[in-house]
Length: 175
Length: 175
Length: 175
Image (cartoon, rainbow over all chains, first blue to last red):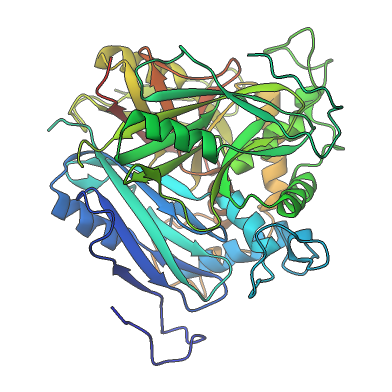
């Protein structure tokens, strides 16, 4: 299960690893993915992992719900094009700037959900809420119904961290 | 069914009330919640109400779709931390400022969907569209599959008002 | 199938056409809609088409997942009010301005997913990710569970183009 990289996290040639976590959520219709991100902000393409799971399931028609388990990450369906991802992060940093002071990050005021290793990540929470935590993609003929440029993307906004995504497959009971 | 508060709406100690509405949508797989918000902008944690419904349903594997019935509210999955909610509202007020003039609020131009008591809420519609009206959360072992800090949150953007949320539970037919 | 308009695309009286595409995704629980948009930015109300499909399906309880097949369009649930749509587009153009230079649109740097007729649309991708690519709406008593002002809206952000939307209906297996 250990897939830690040997190259430094900042390397552009060292993308996040995606691993299916076996034995969890095990009705054969739920998938748990573990994602080790490498950068502060990073987009990880989950499409191939999700398609493999679909193939194994044997389900031909239905919906796949993809849901991140974290409050500073997001799921979006868009293009897997690295320059675009840089554009997206630049826009998000204009919308909820990391340089602003967020009350969420103020140790003199914060009383709820405090931990020892509290991260300064108010901006990442706000950015994550703008993008959304889940997507629902139709399944048709055993495949994700995606347009030509669409991929299912995990968006890290407060990395690098070890992350998890859960996908739930619902069959329409037909075909 | 009446749960009106006796303290003024501005009180920080008087959170919104959440009530399940019985006898609606009654196939045992749909839940209707009534939410009385107390402030202009407010976050209401729906997680406990949704978990109670799940328990009663007996469904162990599937997906729960949570959907607000209003155009100036949103559903997000994020942290239940009051300072963060203040941060979010401040960012949303930068993105779609309540102080701007919206054509939607211009009685000299508006011809569609006009009512007697039209609210000035163009900004709240825009903010709601940025956050999104629904979330889909996997159900695993009879519980919402939520990460450590995740809660299902209703976001009021044009309150106080009486609001409703509908949740639909789909079983994967397994387990 | 040809429904091309005879009036110029800029006419305010010439809305986008929505056509169900027969013989696709044909388990009776999936709908494919073809949408011909007429303007650069445009909102198209899909509610009537989705309701017709629901009626034909005979499904009374469940969830309808509506998913766009494009990376520069979005699905939102909000009000069908033209002035509000103008407000939304103005706010989106502040959040991810079409006038900015996006790396995604830089032919000297772009190496991934390049096509002959590459559009300058970095801003439209970013706007689409802020709005979201899908919505999940509960189905109750054979109808979409929508609030008084809610409609299911397709949002064009890089038109005019021919577009497609896929909807997947999942029955709760009850009622």
